[in-house]
Length: 559
Image (cartoon, rainbow, N blue to C red; front, side, top):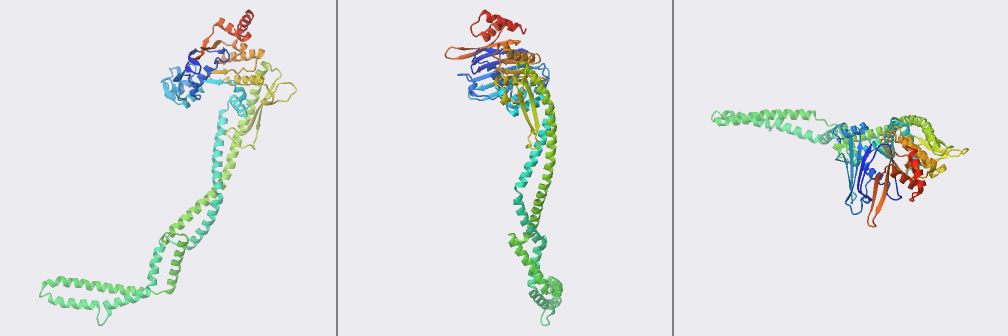
């Protein structure tokens, strides 16, 4: 629980130290004295937004420190250990500090270690619950009503399951819409690709075919010249009667072989010429074989010419080099395959969406049934509490209507509405159409008291939530808060003597001004001081014997 609050240079507070105890602590004081300053300061320690205007005039910074006793909060101790903010579970004190500079910058510390605001907000959820004076107006919003019902139902697993199904469905819908939005472009591209790929499929050029075609085309185009020249070369090398290369070399070898007997220097030359004889003979044989095998085939020439020309035409049509036509064909076929799969995926995803929507609806339906069950119990409790607060004939109900046609969202498909009838014979209607400000305060307070039970939050703050109520009703409200203070620490800022008298402890806020500066002070009241303060709340600033007697009687009635 919260044990101490230290405030320095925050708004109208120059220096303030507050010791807090268990039970119900009420805070009273003069109008405009700053009764809510402690709550504002505590809000900073809970991670609320900081502003330069919060810093006291002429001060360089505001400094707020909140101390907690964790002896009954093992969950918080474990959180601190997990985040390296406490050495062991034997350390049962928590100190949160928030500093705000006059420039508006802020720093946060937990047990002396600098932390982020996210960490501050995370741990604050386990420490304090603040109900502000405008909380009742929030009760008119459907979103607030839904959250109150869900918190009371304590069905987080169902809520999380719906959220997970919604997120999965949303991702699938986004993917489907993305595919759908490009469907026309894909269809146009697919039509073009189908034509192009079919054309290239029919031509079916091989991977290296164009290079082979080019070579064959050159050879067949020059086949007559090749035949004539190779035959002529063979004739000159081997067959010419008047002169051929083979005979000429042979004659030279014969003459030099005789001469080398006279000069051995001719032997190497003879060897070279013998090799030449062999080479000429081999070359002649190869030329003869080549010319014999060389065919002049007009039909084949026509076929090669046609395929070669088609290759060139297709390459120009597709604006690629002829050598790249095969690779281009494969790329177009791959792209067509991908587009076909995407269109198939669209159909598959549409079927998948139907399944995901069904799964989401089933999860939302289970959540709705849980809400309906919890709504009956919560309505009974609220009705019981508000009837005790001078609304004896009130009828309170919670409508939970499952709308399967409603667009999916993370919170299910329920339309939730709190309804009330404050007079017999009048049908229940929504809160905003029926209740007055005071009646709304009573409904809101009842819901806050009910929702606080079992939530394991050690400290609850109520900031003038009793606005709009008085008399016997105020007494009932005070008793409710006092009863709540039996199970957790409750701090309530109030202007009602009936509520103030119910406090186990009471603090008084006063404001001092010397026409230059203004300061707010807060002190703890003893029994006599409490009687005087209650008398002031009952009768105004003039304390009469009658007012004091009434105040004493009021205070003693709750002792």
